[in-house]
Length: 171
Length: 178
Image (cartoon, rainbow over all chains, first blue to last red; front, side, top):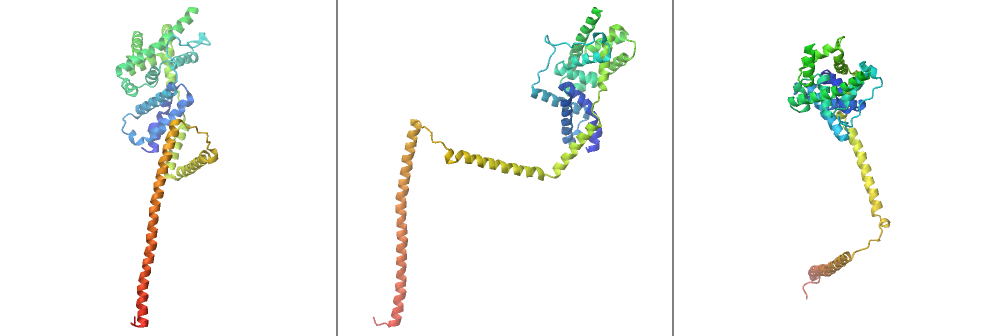
Protein backbone atom coordinates (compact mmCIF):
# COMPACT_ATOMS: atom_id res chain seq x y z
CA UNK A 1 0.00 0.00 0.00
CA UNK A 2 1.53 3.33 -1.02
CA UNK A 3 0.83 6.80 0.36
CA UNK A 4 -1.90 7.60 -2.17
CA UNK A 5 -3.78 4.40 -1.49
CA UNK A 6 -3.38 4.96 2.23
CA UNK A 7 -4.83 8.43 1.88
CA UNK A 8 -7.79 7.22 -0.16
CA UNK A 9 -8.64 4.02 1.62
CA UNK A 10 -7.56 4.54 5.20
CA UNK A 11 -7.39 8.26 5.96
CA UNK A 12 -10.91 8.79 4.64
CA UNK A 13 -12.34 7.11 7.75
CA UNK A 14 -10.69 9.70 10.00
CA UNK A 15 -13.89 11.40 11.13
CA UNK A 16 -15.55 8.10 11.90
CA UNK A 17 -12.57 7.04 14.00
CA UNK A 18 -12.49 10.46 15.62
CA UNK A 19 -16.19 10.32 16.59
CA UNK A 20 -15.72 6.88 18.13
CA UNK A 21 -12.56 7.93 19.97
CA UNK A 22 -14.24 11.06 21.24
CA UNK A 23 -17.29 9.12 22.40
CA UNK A 24 -15.05 6.78 24.39
CA UNK A 25 -12.51 9.31 25.70
CA UNK A 26 -14.91 12.23 26.19
CA UNK A 27 -12.19 14.66 25.21
CA UNK A 28 -11.59 16.40 21.89
CA UNK A 29 -7.80 16.82 22.11
CA UNK A 30 -7.19 13.32 23.39
CA UNK A 31 -9.38 11.88 20.68
CA UNK A 32 -7.47 13.76 17.99
CA UNK A 33 -4.10 12.60 19.36
CA UNK A 34 -5.41 9.05 19.59
CA UNK A 35 -6.58 9.06 15.97
CA UNK A 36 -3.19 10.39 14.86
CA UNK A 37 -1.40 7.60 16.69
CA UNK A 38 -3.80 5.04 15.27
CA UNK A 39 -3.15 6.16 11.70
CA UNK A 40 0.62 5.98 12.24
CA UNK A 41 0.17 2.46 13.60
CA UNK A 42 -1.95 1.52 10.61
CA UNK A 43 0.70 2.95 8.28
CA UNK A 44 3.42 0.89 9.97
CA UNK A 45 1.28 -2.19 9.43
CA UNK A 46 0.26 -1.26 5.90
CA UNK A 47 1.68 -4.50 4.48
CA UNK A 48 -0.96 -6.42 6.46
CA UNK A 49 -3.87 -4.10 5.72
CA UNK A 50 -4.78 -5.75 2.43
CA UNK A 51 -5.44 -8.97 4.34
CA UNK A 52 -8.52 -7.40 5.87
CA UNK A 53 -11.59 -7.41 3.67
CA UNK A 54 -13.11 -4.61 5.67
CA UNK A 55 -10.37 -2.08 6.38
CA UNK A 56 -12.89 0.30 7.96
CA UNK A 57 -14.08 -2.25 10.52
CA UNK A 58 -10.46 -3.17 11.22
CA UNK A 59 -9.54 0.48 11.78
CA UNK A 60 -12.51 0.84 14.13
CA UNK A 61 -11.39 -2.23 16.08
CA UNK A 62 -7.90 -0.75 16.43
CA UNK A 63 -9.45 2.52 17.61
CA UNK A 64 -11.66 0.79 20.16
CA UNK A 65 -8.74 -1.19 21.59
CA UNK A 66 -6.51 1.86 21.67
CA UNK A 67 -9.06 4.01 23.51
CA UNK A 68 -10.04 1.30 25.97
CA UNK A 69 -6.35 0.72 26.77
CA UNK A 70 -5.97 4.44 27.30
CA UNK A 71 -8.96 4.51 29.63
CA UNK A 72 -7.59 1.57 31.62
CA UNK A 73 -4.22 3.24 31.89
CA UNK A 74 -5.74 6.43 33.15
CA UNK A 75 -7.96 4.42 35.45
CA UNK A 76 -10.57 6.90 34.51
CA UNK A 77 -13.52 6.62 36.78
CA UNK A 78 -16.57 6.52 34.63
CA UNK A 79 -19.86 7.75 35.88
CA UNK A 80 -22.30 4.90 35.52
CA UNK A 81 -26.05 4.90 35.44
CA UNK A 82 -26.94 4.39 39.09
CA UNK A 83 -28.59 6.18 42.00
CA UNK A 84 -25.78 8.66 42.23
CA UNK A 85 -26.19 9.60 38.62
CA UNK A 86 -26.54 13.35 38.25
CA UNK A 87 -29.18 14.30 35.76
CA UNK A 88 -28.45 17.13 33.38
CA UNK A 89 -29.86 20.47 34.35
CA UNK A 90 -31.95 22.09 31.67
CA UNK A 91 -31.42 25.76 31.36
CA UNK A 92 -34.54 26.28 29.29
CA UNK A 93 -37.01 23.44 29.93
CA UNK A 94 -39.60 24.94 27.60
CA UNK A 95 -37.20 24.43 24.76
CA UNK A 96 -36.97 20.69 25.35
CA UNK A 97 -37.78 19.88 21.74
CA UNK A 98 -35.68 22.56 20.24
CA UNK A 99 -32.76 20.76 18.83
CA UNK A 100 -29.74 22.33 20.54
CA UNK A 101 -31.07 22.02 24.07
CA UNK A 102 -32.35 18.49 23.66
CA UNK A 103 -29.28 17.40 21.72
CA UNK A 104 -27.12 18.52 24.59
CA UNK A 105 -29.19 16.42 26.94
CA UNK A 106 -28.99 13.32 24.77
CA UNK A 107 -25.25 13.82 24.31
CA UNK A 108 -24.86 14.06 28.05
CA UNK A 109 -26.93 10.91 28.58
CA UNK A 110 -24.88 8.91 26.10
CA UNK A 111 -21.56 10.17 27.42
CA UNK A 112 -22.52 8.97 30.87
CA UNK A 113 -23.50 5.47 29.85
CA UNK A 114 -21.13 2.60 30.71
CA UNK A 115 -18.30 2.25 28.21
CA UNK A 116 -19.69 -0.69 26.22
CA UNK A 117 -23.19 0.80 25.95
CA UNK A 118 -21.74 4.08 24.76
CA UNK A 119 -19.70 2.24 22.16
CA UNK A 120 -22.61 0.14 20.92
CA UNK A 121 -24.82 3.22 20.48
CA UNK A 122 -22.04 4.99 18.62
CA UNK A 123 -21.32 2.05 16.33
CA UNK A 124 -24.97 1.28 15.53
CA UNK A 125 -27.15 4.35 15.83
CA UNK A 126 -24.54 6.83 14.65
CA UNK A 127 -22.05 4.97 12.47
CA UNK A 128 -24.55 2.42 11.14
CA UNK A 129 -22.45 -0.75 11.39
CA UNK A 130 -24.21 -4.10 10.98
CA UNK A 131 -24.80 -6.27 14.02
CA UNK A 132 -22.17 -8.80 12.90
CA UNK A 133 -19.58 -6.08 12.29
CA UNK A 134 -20.22 -4.72 15.79
CA UNK A 135 -19.90 -8.24 17.19
CA UNK A 136 -16.47 -8.52 15.52
CA UNK A 137 -15.33 -5.07 16.61
CA UNK A 138 -16.41 -5.52 20.22
CA UNK A 139 -15.44 -9.18 20.31
CA UNK A 140 -18.84 -10.31 21.64
CA UNK A 141 -21.67 -12.42 20.19
CA UNK A 142 -24.41 -11.05 17.94
CA UNK A 143 -26.92 -11.86 20.68
CA UNK A 144 -24.92 -9.81 23.16
CA UNK A 145 -24.82 -6.89 20.74
CA UNK A 146 -28.65 -6.89 20.69
CA UNK A 147 -28.88 -7.10 24.48
CA UNK A 148 -26.39 -4.25 24.90
CA UNK A 149 -28.17 -2.13 22.30
CA UNK A 150 -31.54 -2.67 23.92
CA UNK A 151 -30.15 -1.75 27.33
CA UNK A 152 -28.42 1.38 26.09
CA UNK A 153 -31.40 2.59 24.04
CA UNK A 154 -33.75 2.05 26.97
CA UNK A 155 -31.47 3.89 29.39
CA UNK A 156 -31.60 6.91 27.14
CA UNK A 157 -35.35 6.67 26.61
CA UNK A 158 -36.15 6.29 30.31
CA UNK A 159 -34.40 9.46 31.30
CA UNK A 160 -35.69 11.39 28.33
CA UNK A 161 -39.26 10.28 29.13
CA UNK A 162 -38.87 11.45 32.71
CA UNK A 163 -37.75 14.85 31.51
CA UNK A 164 -40.57 14.99 29.01
CA UNK A 165 -43.25 14.13 31.61
CA UNK A 166 -41.78 16.53 34.11
CA UNK A 167 -42.13 19.31 31.61
CA UNK A 168 -45.70 18.39 30.68
CA UNK A 169 -46.93 17.98 34.25
CA UNK A 170 -45.68 21.43 35.10
CA UNK A 171 -47.61 22.93 32.24
CA UNK B 1 -48.53 4.84 11.97
CA UNK B 2 -48.94 1.42 13.58
CA UNK B 3 -45.99 0.18 11.57
CA UNK B 4 -43.83 2.97 13.00
CA UNK B 5 -44.93 2.26 16.57
CA UNK B 6 -44.15 -1.44 16.09
CA UNK B 7 -40.76 -0.56 14.68
CA UNK B 8 -40.08 1.68 17.67
CA UNK B 9 -40.81 -1.20 20.04
CA UNK B 10 -38.61 -3.51 18.01
CA UNK B 11 -35.91 -0.84 18.04
CA UNK B 12 -35.88 -0.73 21.86
CA UNK B 13 -35.60 -4.52 21.99
CA UNK B 14 -32.45 -4.25 19.87
CA UNK B 15 -34.12 -6.22 17.08
CA UNK B 16 -34.42 -3.79 14.15
CA UNK B 17 -32.35 -4.23 10.99
CA UNK B 18 -30.34 -1.38 9.49
CA UNK B 19 -33.06 -0.83 6.87
CA UNK B 20 -35.79 -0.64 9.49
CA UNK B 21 -33.76 1.85 11.43
CA UNK B 22 -33.32 3.92 8.30
CA UNK B 23 -37.09 3.85 7.84
CA UNK B 24 -37.54 5.21 11.37
CA UNK B 25 -34.91 7.86 10.87
CA UNK B 26 -36.49 8.99 7.58
CA UNK B 27 -39.90 9.12 9.20
CA UNK B 28 -38.73 11.34 12.03
CA UNK B 29 -36.89 13.68 9.74
CA UNK B 30 -40.17 14.74 8.14
CA UNK B 31 -42.30 17.52 9.54
CA UNK B 32 -45.55 16.62 11.33
CA UNK B 33 -44.87 14.13 14.09
CA UNK B 34 -47.60 13.38 16.65
CA UNK B 35 -46.98 14.80 20.12
CA UNK B 36 -46.49 11.36 21.72
CA UNK B 37 -43.64 10.59 19.32
CA UNK B 38 -41.79 13.91 19.69
CA UNK B 39 -39.37 12.27 22.11
CA UNK B 40 -38.22 9.81 19.45
CA UNK B 41 -37.93 12.49 16.85
CA UNK B 42 -35.40 14.29 19.02
CA UNK B 43 -33.38 11.14 19.47
CA UNK B 44 -33.27 10.12 15.83
CA UNK B 45 -32.50 13.64 14.73
CA UNK B 46 -29.66 13.73 17.21
CA UNK B 47 -28.11 10.60 15.71
CA UNK B 48 -28.48 12.06 12.24
CA UNK B 49 -26.66 15.21 13.26
CA UNK B 50 -23.90 13.21 14.98
CA UNK B 51 -23.31 11.32 11.73
CA UNK B 52 -22.53 14.61 10.06
CA UNK B 53 -20.09 15.69 12.75
CA UNK B 54 -16.79 15.84 10.86
CA UNK B 55 -14.33 18.13 12.63
CA UNK B 56 -11.19 16.69 11.01
CA UNK B 57 -10.34 18.33 7.70
CA UNK B 58 -7.65 17.78 5.08
CA UNK B 59 -5.21 19.60 7.41
CA UNK B 60 -5.33 16.49 9.50
CA UNK B 61 -4.46 14.34 6.47
CA UNK B 62 -1.49 16.58 5.77
CA UNK B 63 -0.30 16.29 9.35
CA UNK B 64 -0.41 12.48 9.17
CA UNK B 65 1.26 12.36 5.75
CA UNK B 66 3.99 14.70 7.02
CA UNK B 67 4.68 12.40 9.93
CA UNK B 68 4.75 9.38 7.67
CA UNK B 69 7.27 10.96 5.28
CA UNK B 70 9.38 12.25 8.17
CA UNK B 71 9.65 8.70 9.44
CA UNK B 72 10.99 7.60 6.07
CA UNK B 73 13.79 10.18 6.22
CA UNK B 74 14.82 8.99 9.65
CA UNK B 75 15.12 5.45 8.33
CA UNK B 76 17.37 6.68 5.51
CA UNK B 77 19.68 8.59 7.84
CA UNK B 78 20.29 6.61 10.96
CA UNK B 79 23.45 8.60 11.83
CA UNK B 80 21.55 11.21 13.78
CA UNK B 81 20.18 9.00 16.53
CA UNK B 82 23.52 7.15 16.75
CA UNK B 83 25.34 10.44 17.20
CA UNK B 84 22.98 11.36 20.00
CA UNK B 85 23.47 7.91 21.49
CA UNK B 86 27.24 8.45 21.52
CA UNK B 87 26.94 11.77 23.32
CA UNK B 88 24.55 10.24 25.81
CA UNK B 89 26.88 7.33 26.50
CA UNK B 90 29.87 9.64 26.96
CA UNK B 91 27.85 11.78 29.34
CA UNK B 92 26.70 8.69 31.22
CA UNK B 93 30.25 7.39 31.68
CA UNK B 94 31.40 10.82 32.85
CA UNK B 95 28.64 10.85 35.42
CA UNK B 96 29.64 7.39 36.60
CA UNK B 97 33.32 8.39 36.89
CA UNK B 98 32.56 11.60 38.74
CA UNK B 99 30.21 9.90 41.15
CA UNK B 100 32.75 7.10 41.67
CA UNK B 101 35.31 9.74 42.58
CA UNK B 102 33.03 11.26 45.18
CA UNK B 103 32.01 7.91 46.58
CA UNK B 104 35.46 6.26 46.78
CA UNK B 105 37.79 9.20 47.36
CA UNK B 106 39.54 8.47 50.70
CA UNK B 107 38.49 11.75 52.29
CA UNK B 108 34.94 10.91 51.66
CA UNK B 109 35.14 7.52 53.26
CA UNK B 110 34.09 7.89 56.84
CA UNK B 111 35.80 5.54 59.27
CA UNK B 112 33.03 5.32 61.77
CA UNK B 113 32.25 1.75 60.88
CA UNK B 114 31.59 -0.01 64.14
CA UNK B 115 31.95 -3.75 64.02
CA UNK B 116 29.90 -6.37 65.77
CA UNK B 117 31.77 -9.01 67.72
CA UNK B 118 30.97 -11.55 65.02
CA UNK B 119 32.49 -9.24 62.43
CA UNK B 120 35.50 -8.59 64.62
CA UNK B 121 36.02 -12.29 65.09
CA UNK B 122 35.81 -12.82 61.35
CA UNK B 123 38.17 -9.96 60.74
CA UNK B 124 40.73 -11.44 63.15
CA UNK B 125 40.41 -14.86 61.57
CA UNK B 126 40.94 -13.32 58.18
CA UNK B 127 44.02 -11.47 59.39
CA UNK B 128 45.46 -14.65 60.88
CA UNK B 129 44.83 -16.48 57.61
CA UNK B 130 46.41 -13.68 55.61
CA UNK B 131 49.45 -13.65 57.93
CA UNK B 132 49.88 -17.37 57.40
CA UNK B 133 49.67 -16.87 53.67
CA UNK B 134 52.28 -14.10 53.78
CA UNK B 135 54.51 -16.29 55.98
CA UNK B 136 54.37 -19.07 53.41
CA UNK B 137 55.06 -16.65 50.64
CA UNK B 138 58.14 -15.37 52.48
CA UNK B 139 59.33 -18.88 53.04
CA UNK B 140 58.83 -19.74 49.40
CA UNK B 141 60.57 -16.55 48.42
CA UNK B 142 63.57 -17.62 50.50
CA UNK B 143 63.64 -20.92 48.66
CA UNK B 144 63.38 -19.14 45.35
CA UNK B 145 66.45 -17.07 46.21
CA UNK B 146 68.46 -20.28 46.12
CA UNK B 147 67.71 -20.45 42.42
CA UNK B 148 69.58 -17.20 41.91
CA UNK B 149 72.56 -18.66 43.81
CA UNK B 150 72.38 -21.64 41.50
CA UNK B 151 72.34 -19.30 38.55
CA UNK B 152 75.40 -17.36 39.70
CA UNK B 153 77.20 -20.64 40.38
CA UNK B 154 76.45 -21.68 36.83
CA UNK B 155 78.13 -18.49 35.65
CA UNK B 156 81.17 -19.38 37.69
CA UNK B 157 81.19 -22.79 36.12
CA UNK B 158 81.07 -21.18 32.72
CA UNK B 159 84.46 -19.64 33.51
CA UNK B 160 85.87 -23.16 33.50
CA UNK B 161 85.36 -23.33 29.75
CA UNK B 162 87.55 -20.21 29.44
CA UNK B 163 90.13 -21.96 31.56
CA UNK B 164 90.15 -24.89 29.14
CA UNK B 165 90.38 -22.54 26.17
CA UNK B 166 93.29 -20.52 27.58
CA UNK B 167 95.03 -23.65 28.72
CA UNK B 168 95.15 -24.88 25.13
CA UNK B 169 96.29 -21.45 24.00
CA UNK B 170 99.17 -21.30 26.44
CA UNK B 171 100.17 -24.82 25.61
CA UNK B 172 100.37 -23.85 21.93
CA UNK B 173 102.56 -20.80 22.69
CA UNK B 174 104.86 -22.30 25.23
CA UNK B 175 105.17 -25.57 23.51
CA UNK B 176 104.57 -28.89 25.03
CA UNK B 177 107.22 -28.51 27.67
CA UNK B 178 105.20 -29.03 30.73
